[in-house]
Length: 320
Image (tube, rainbow, N blue to C red; front, side, top):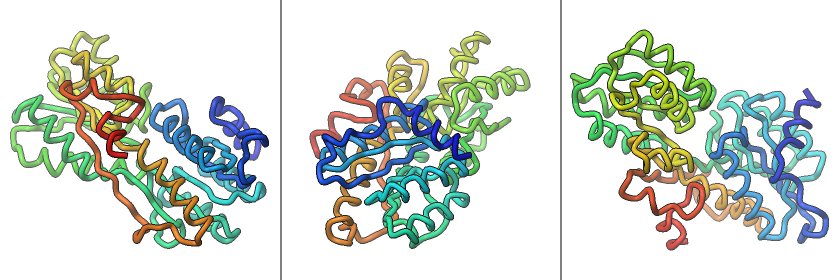
């Protein structure tokens, strides 16, 4: 598995180690994300690395791609490299606990972004989207788009990620208030566009008369849209997403996606590095709570034109 870790790290082109010339104070912040083929996680790594370098650190970004063994090897590398801090998007709510604990035992503070682990007191901070709030926003908009009577299906994210259950539960809380909204099928597509496409194909074959799909993220939704196009059924099915990815925003503009829910990953990835910097310098994060929630923003045709960068709206930059 050590080879896998090296491949994951070295394959992350465009986000790899800074040269010694721009090392600033010479300290290293190691940034470990999930899978940079997904624009959400790629932005997460880019923003964190940019902020770290701006603050005078070296930044090394690598990817575990959801594999806890690779994650463990990358944590070992970060420890060996005497990282001043680790920014980690954990691979598994339970399976990543050991890696965070190992870094803590080595005296390296860990700042979690995007996803949580199921143990408090190990990471210095856990910075995540307010997934329950975002799911409620999305589900309410989905009802506006599809109506209060429909047969629909759902695509869910990876079960190892608490965000998947939080979003699905948030959808159910809203949609269960409408007795004529009938969920006829749901499938796990692991946040992946190809799996979203394939699982949508299967659900369409079993339920050809559905009129709605609600998805746990944009990649699965975009895969499903491709399957609906192939079947000639996109016009009859209202699709809702979650993430606010560039491709999803384009799909909202074109009318293929009813809406998406923006996760402020560009905000909390930057803030995680700022808190790590504060901790390195003072021994404190500068915030009162380990877990920090960042509210999501509904994206429709009305504000889809306000994007100035991936996962960044004009209103977010003007207030920062």
